[in-house]
Amino acid sequence: MKTVAIIAHNGKKAEMVQFLNNHRESLQAKNIKLIATGTTGAKTESAGFEVEKLLSGPLGGDAQIASRIAEGKVDMVIFFRDPLDKHPHEPDIFMLMRLCDVHDIPLATNPASARLLMQAF
Image 1 (cartoon, rainbow, N blue to C red):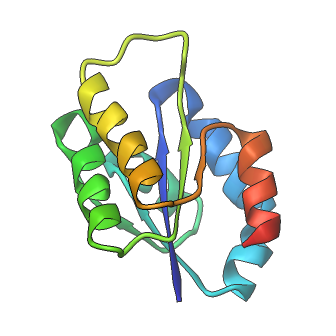
Image 2 (tube, rainbow, N blue to C red; image 1 turned 45 degrees about the vertical axis):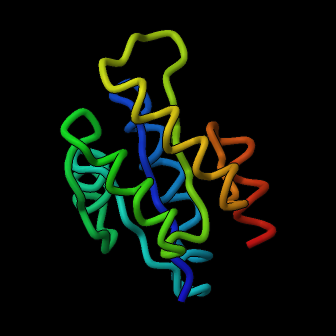
C-alpha cells in the first residue's frame, strides 16, 4: 500500500477535493492510503474519502507529515499551496518541502503536477 500525504491551504481546499474526486477510481484501484493535515482531512473525509487526519498545518500538521517523510512512511506529497497569501507556519512548509527533496519524495504543488504524478504512480 502506498501512502500519499495531502495538504491544501485554505484557498485551495476545494480544489484539492475536486482533484481527489477526479481521481477517486485511480486512488481506490491503486489502494492508496491518504493522510492529511486537519482541515484538509476533514474536507476530504466529508467528500467520502477515508483519510487519516493529523493536526492542522499551523498547529503542527505540516511537521507531522515531514516527520513521516523522514521515517520513510510517505510515498508522495500533494500540497496545493496558495502562493498569494501569507502563512504563519511558513518555516514548517519549507521544512516539509526540503525533506521531500532530501528523501527523494515526489511533491506536487498544483493540480497540473499532481495529475502527472498520479499518472506515473
